[in-house]
Length: 291
Image 1 (cartoon, one colour):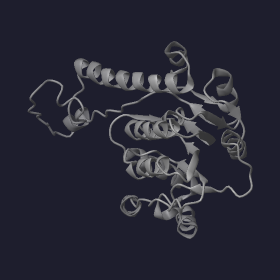
Image 2 (image 1 turned 180 degrees about the horizontal axis):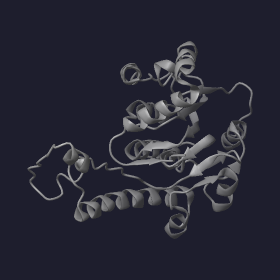
Image 3 (image 1 turned 120 degrees about the horizontal axis):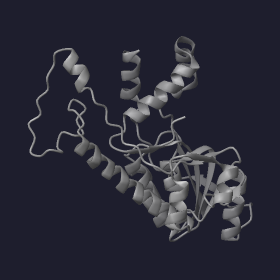
Image 4 (image 1 turned 120 degrees about the vertical axis):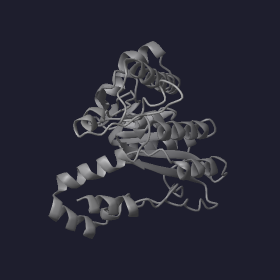
């Protein structure tokens, strides 16, 4: 099992390259699927290129993600916000558009979700394991020589002190405040209103529309229709082109290889492995909906 996990991590690190935008006027389509990592440079670079391209007239963002790294979500948020300051942006959500995935969605002028979409989940979590009791039971003592009392408080081999917990809570609170500010600005809601909704819970699309977190219930076709109305164009002779190519997130997503592994490990284990590997690859605080 460990060998399989290591192999998946080793060969699943490829990055997509930007699609040639071409000279034809078109809408760019960006897909955000799965756990959001903190290294999103390829996407932000492609967004900046599209933003400055005279042939790209608008952006369709297809989101199906429970969230991920706060840093990655913030960088995508800022890149989409910059795009939206110049050209219309619409977001369409699938099964999920929660936490960091909701964060990156709020700069769009219009958000469309299905009635069953899980969205919102406005919050931040920082997990800090403490393995020092276990080390003590097996006779291992780790002595940390630090320049300050807080320096070892993110180290899982050191005991988390009350002061350290307060310090880490302060980090989470500040990141949370930033998240609330993004939602307040993007959704034109008061910070008081956002905070009343932001205890970490998810909302269905049907709940979210009544709370002002999304604008419309519908699918990608509804999102495309809204964008075309903003651009005052018809359906004919006006393409929607991918901003980046969709590639397999992991080598085992290839149907034949995945089928073999699912036969050995079971589909449920494969899904959990995919999710946990992606989450464990993130550093720092995360904004993610964990069912």
